[in-house]
Image (cartoon, rainbow, N blue to C red; front, side, top):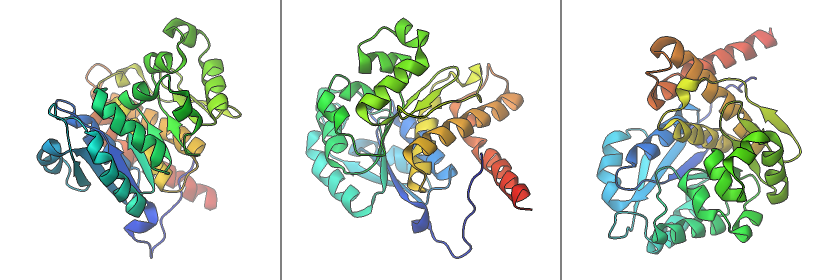
Amino acid sequence: MLMPGRKRDSHKGDYGHLMVIGGSPGLTGAVCLASMSALRCGCGLVTAAIPKSLNGIIEAKLTEAMSLPLPETERGTFSPSGADACLGYIEKRIDAIVIGPGISTDCETAIFARRIISESGRPLVIDADAIRIISGDGEILRNLVRGSILTPHPGEMSCLTGEKISEIEADREGKASFFAGRNKTVLLLKGHRTVITDGKETSINLTGNPGMATAGSGDVLAGMIGGLLVRGFGCYEAARRGAYIHGLAGDLAAREKGEESLVASDIMEKIPEVLMRMKAGRRRRSL
């Protein structure tokens, strides 16, 4: 699996602008992990859209990403009143969106998130609580922008389909493929041997290890996929490559830290090494 090189005369705008929408009190780390992982995967620009009271935290933790503070509820979560400003920013600047890391399922936040998902007109990586927010909403699912990706773990897949986790785990490939085909989207079903499918083509990812079952690992993956998406990879390929790089980064991190001590930022820190290995593979093939 190879990665393209960068042109010598390129600039940051050539590598896409991703928006990461998420965060709520106590869950700012999710947005930071997703944003930095996207940048580590080579995208040119990242804007983190967060409830305004979290902006100071985000700006302190994220040096390279920009922030877009938006109106919030009394509980410090996204308010529906911020949707227009967010959509206006997206229309002018953004190529794709990751929505969900740390966003919460607050009822007013759910209204905000549904508007962004329905009206943004951009490919989406829908993760974490954003999956729960749209679960059971057949209209939103049927009308997702072409090029969108859902990244559920089995519990979130259960919310999407109404099936028991045990039923999903008994036929991971079949359940994922049926859902993706019916909703004309790409689905990445997390877990041991992650399934990536668009309903027609299916891949099973073989990288990764049990140490990656840790808080924030999914946020890293969502950001990586978003970063690849804005770089120009198609939705299926962005999800497939994202899963592979994420797993291999986790494998390299586990060699140094051990599976028991692995944390999500360890995975993120190994992304550059994985990409350099892939780039070296591309060079060898060109000789």
